[in-house]
Length: 321
Image (cartoon, rainbow, N blue to C red; front, side, top):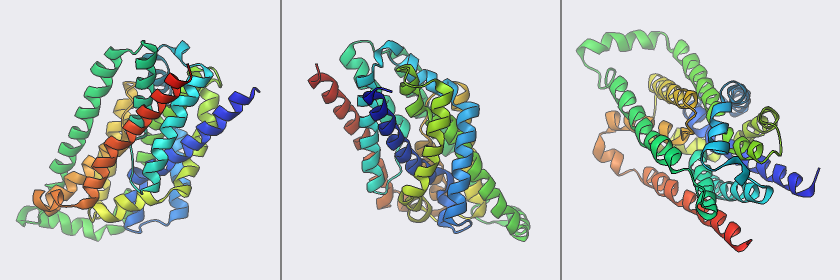
């Protein structure tokens, strides 16, 4: 195997590690933060369901990233190195700062930089499919989570009996939280592992299925390596109980699976975070939610890290000419 292919595989594995560290926050952040499950079994379940989701659902999103934003022939070895390396650098910065970041955003922005430099960016895919979904799906997550949460909060006459019934079955709710966390991990594998597989398969470094089999387990292992973003969501944004956690997970996982079925690369972190914000709005009110410093740190980094990815990709391609 040529040296550049080995370097590309190593860098892709490093990117997958960082993606796993960022993606475990939406999947198991609530379960870990509320101590419903210990870290080791949580990371094992996360990795298992990420691999399963990647193999079952990941092909369509990988084709979008590898074929639809720029022509596949654009992904020569060096261009793929630039995309994967820039995205990995941006995501590493987010993990070091303990902020869950969208793996999709940094990848799409990196590929967008490639299309702008090469002059072959497919703007229809970007502006008619991806960007509208990036706006609509997090808002749908917020609206659905807020609407369902308002059924149970605040406690009042008609829902008090339902709340008492749920408390009697608390052990079932704990299992529901863990099961729904696995559901999010499955959805995450079906959408986000494609970030690294799409460019690799387009560059013909590895066949798509082989790339999924190689990168998905590394993605899962990254959860254990970079566990701090999970603590940020699970402990620092809003206290979330058993039922609220299940709502957040089920809404998040379902929206991401729908996105994958339409071959749309969608940010799990954004969809999940807007669901958590909906719970915060219902429980704490808009004023308290708006004063939360962690939320503003997350929002700020969401926009900074894609710019790092774009800038790094742009410089690598322009100065390599």
